[in-house]
Image (cartoon, rainbow, N blue to C red; front, side, top):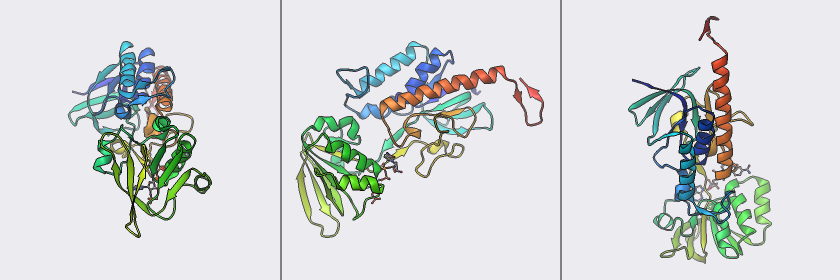
Length: 323
Ligand code: NDP
């Protein structure tokens, strides 16, 4: 039998938990399915120093635990499970299957499944993740104040992060695999005009070196195959992100990279009663605090949507009024 849910939240990062706190306090009795990694991307982060309210900083997993406790305090029903299939109808209720078995029917759905950083796929990158290897310069750049770091990638994210790092670190070694950058012209110009960003064209990362922490990066020139070791303390990967939108794509409009498209200034999607927040729909800022902000928006919009529905009888296509 289908379980009927008033407000379903899919995903448990800062966006999902914030949506849950607001939805629960508004009396929507939200049910959250966490996905495989309860807490999302922050569970792989060490110190978070830029989230307001934690003046001494906090570990990512601890922060997510605080979010969870706060959502539970107001009655969010938090359950472990993955949304594996959806059927979003023209009007709610919308159907969602959890782990291919549990079938739910929801009056409103908040999508907060986040995004994942793309990685190079090197063993050393995995081994030293959190010990010098990072996919977020804004989160971790500060730990390398006045030190040398490397960044790989040549899109807008890499350019933006290289510029950010150049203000904190002594030298930023930027590893670009082709002889051109994908980043917008203005960003490229800024990168190339920054004296402490050194660009290595036609270069691939061969290995990240260091036993317990990053000590250097070895790069290989794609044309000459010459290898060079650069001593660095931090290694930033900025080769793109993948939003976790595959399961919704049949119904929800996404852009060419898979980010959910929302109505500007809101979290509404193209489907009535389905809202999207956090990194799933944000390819520009991708911060815990901005994800939390859009999570709040999603819950407020859901609350308005559900209360409007309760007060206005639904007009069927035939023109007759239904309850
Ligand atoms: P992109 O996909 O645009 O760029 C990825 C970059 O990483 C490319 O330069 C690519 O190289 C490189 N790359 C991919 N795989 C590898 C690899 N295995 N080894 C080395 N290099 C690799 O991702 P972004 O995150 O930069 O941007 C995503 C979107 O978000 C873009 O549309 C961008 O414009 C937008 N954005 C906008 C911002 C803004 O408006 N302020 C800020 C940040 C992003 P190659 O070019 O050779 O394929």
